[in-house]
Image (cartoon, rainbow, N blue to C red; front, side):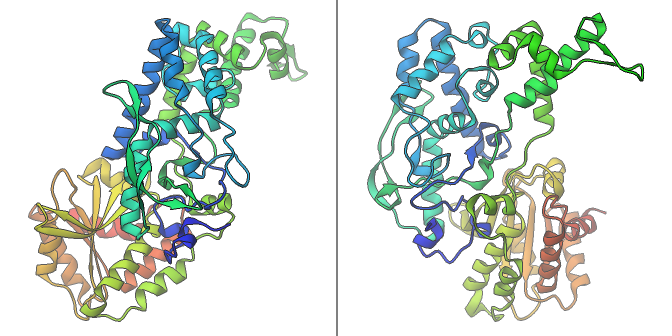
Length: 478
């Protein structure tokens, strides 16, 4: 199947793209997880979380207040978002998950749910655990519907960034207005491929499986609690083994207490702390974004070709005449190498009312590794990259240029990527001086360093510890 990058001849592969490179005429089996939105340390992510909370709580309030027609009206606007090309359909998207009938079924399930009436239900993802008929694909579709407006803006930004043409006056579909607590629509610019509009989705927010799992909550929390309860009361379910150990089987517990979402709601109402424990553990052990390899498996494509990405950057002749090509090659390489810690690249981003430009900037959304540690201890909401395709060493003016892009709100960490550093120790010492003068933290990387960075990425793609960056940063603060 032809993907977005192939259809528009972007000259890019999935690892170098910020969005999911979906097929034009088909779906891939990944989902938008509302919990993944909470991991995004950005204004865009915060907006999405706020929209999801606003819609779901508005629906719950309508049902709990017996304003059922209001709830049905809000839910009727939900459709399977075929424009994302994500989900469970095979071949051409067919609207399997959400439509008028299934939206009414969602209302019926919520209206009759004891979890809703009791106030046990709090977030959209809770419905996976406790509401009959609501599955991961439906929660993904609901989430996509609610965050459609931010996704449209993301798509427009991506189209301008990657050179994807858009058509004017495309129907947006329903957009959730959290101020007015209602749906609206408008005409927007969007790409249209294969005769149908296209909505791009950041790969940082998709998962192959939702973070919340009915089976996990039931087996590891509810059944474990019931097992302890049976053991402490020494009931008929307790079996004495030859070793003297007492045992209660999960099969016997299911027979006595039942299974499914009705049993989950009943036992959670009896002991609400089980759900709080589950929520807390999920907060403490978040499911990270999909790796390059997992995305490739879902798409049926190959993983990153690290050597080709590196060679493309190193093969560019040094000199100002090829500075644009060098910047593009470095962006493609770093986007792949530093994913998923850094996302949403911007090239030639303007600041100070256009008086200054940043070659490349990334949003820092790391949940582990070097960039997570960096964001926990220093201003690093964004990471800035300056590319210098010089045939000689950069000097103080280049350091001052990058330092001038920093601010406490934007971030105070950047990479200065160049071709060569004949006197690397001297340049690193200049970076140390910049840090000691409280003008920000700059890590220099030359061609040899890029080679090492790629080797580290090959060896440890799950951790992103990136020893080279940590070593260089330690030099700045020691």
